[in-house]
Amino acid sequence: MKESWDGPLNKIDDYRWEIPKTYNSGMRVPGLIYASSNLLEKIRQDQAPEQVANVAFLPGIVGRSLAMPDIHWGYGFCIGGVAATTLDDGVISPGGVGFDINCGVRLVRTNLTLKEVKPKVELLVDELFRAIPSGVGSKGKIKISYNEMRDVLRRGSKWAVERGFGWEEDILFTEEEGRMKDANPDLISKHALERGKPQLGTLGSGNHFLEIQVIDKVYDPEVARELGLEEGQITVMIHCGSRGLGHQVCTDYLVTMQKAVQKYGIQLPDRQLACAPLSSPEGKNYYAAMACAANYAWANRQCIMHWTREVFAKVFRSTSEELGIKLIYDVAHNIAKIEEHSLKGKKIKLCVHRKGATRAFPPFHPDIPKKYKKIGQPVLIPGDMGRCSYCLVGTEKAMEETFGSTCHGAGRIMSRMKAKKEARGRDIQQELREKGIIVKAESRGTLVEEMSDAYKDVSEVVEVMHQTGISRKVVRMRPLGVIKG
Amino acid sequence: MKEFEILEHTADIGIAAYGKTKREVFINAAKGMYNIITEDKREFKENFSHHIKLTAENLENLLVAWLSELLYLSETKLVVFNKFEIEELSDYQLTGKVFGKRIDQSGHKIKREIKAVTYHRLEVKEDKESGLWRAQVIFDI
Image (cartoon, rainbow over all chains, first blue to last red; front, top):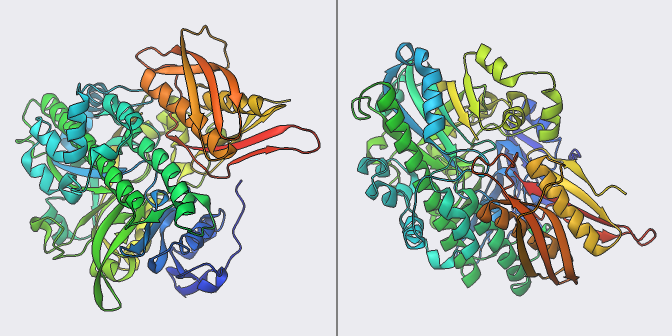
């Protein structure tokens, strides 16, 4: 299954590697992979570069078929893939979004310091584990009707805040303000609604987590200050997506799209790139359904943040307002967005697919919170369990080169089975404890599969984006306590 | 003849299932999927059953539809399935009945959550010489 890739990767510079259009005659644009030469070695070990080349076949694709340094192979599109298509004759592809629609991350700040929190990490982890349903087969504690579900899908974060899960201002610090307006619940199947209804307000499993962190390095003190972040400060990072609802939406629309490919006579090198013209009913319907799932994920993260605030308030015998538990930002990293970009000097609306990639808008972009006008959009990059996470900001370079996109995380390098073999005889939980990290997971299996050795080094990935000027490092956080499904 | 085997994949997990007939390979693919989900080979007494009727564009898509439907049922009815009866199976349609057990609230029966069935390296083929069927499918975890 893991065969290496021998195709051409022409060096443009130390961090940019091009797959020329000539590699495959169906490519409408070249491919471009952002990576260091060290990362590139590993990248060649699976078929992800082939997927980058395949995406270049998509009708209406412009610029280049892009891949971030955390690239690894996925379904149709690789993880870490970015592709922009034109609205009039371009397509939208569910594979360019992923099964876990709006899998994303939010970063929450607090006034607390390492000194205050260190003795309470274990307690916090236990309380969080109790307060936030996580893990396989977990059922949420939010009882809602199908009617109300439709409201969740239409209004995302807004629904959550109105229901008492969080503060009005949280909405301002969420991508899309936690609500894509083209969402239409009529386009969600009953299957998807049934999966989503009991799972609202759950963390899920696998690589999803809630992490208590401490900022252990500040790269850009000015920007950090604007964000309300400083060294020694405690933060919380929440990483999860649209649960069974998103998975089902993608499953449903992959069937629709495969029929659409026949109907519209679209030639594809990989069936998983199944797509439909953005102007077609199938394309519009998928976008509206995807938006529903995205809204669901934002509502989900909003609820989980609310319970996190409650736990901190309880443990520190205070209020979340007193503790300054504010949302820094929330980003999606599996999504397709209609955005205005510059192409050959002209402004044009494009559908930007980001699958395992994060939006990274620059200073003064109209779609970022007013408070961050001068610094640019915060970009949150979760590391794996034992290693650090980052907060970056978006730049003009990102707009010029990657349709305002950057990496999303570490990217796996080891299969789950290999991870299990590597972990034999090892007590991962204890190893982490010795590093000062308390982990509470629903299953030992998850812990083993999610161990650090199974992932690329997120620092390497982030460094590439920083060196290319596509996103700038602001702070680094290291984990203190983690809850996982 | 092995019923199924687990296939390695960087981010996810797959199975190769075998059968002497089309029906058998579909059944063993389901067994393989539940093996990934529960990692539990023990027999258990069923207390839940459900009729299934599906259509798809072709045999491979039908396999995806079959496994996807089982995932949907497991997640919404909170059941794991261990017995699969396929009544009719053409290249485009499947009808059958599946049997399983309701999992308890803590979800102990489930070791791993499968997000979805993918079309990645999807295959359902009959070996012309041996007549043995082989199905290959990768799951998104």
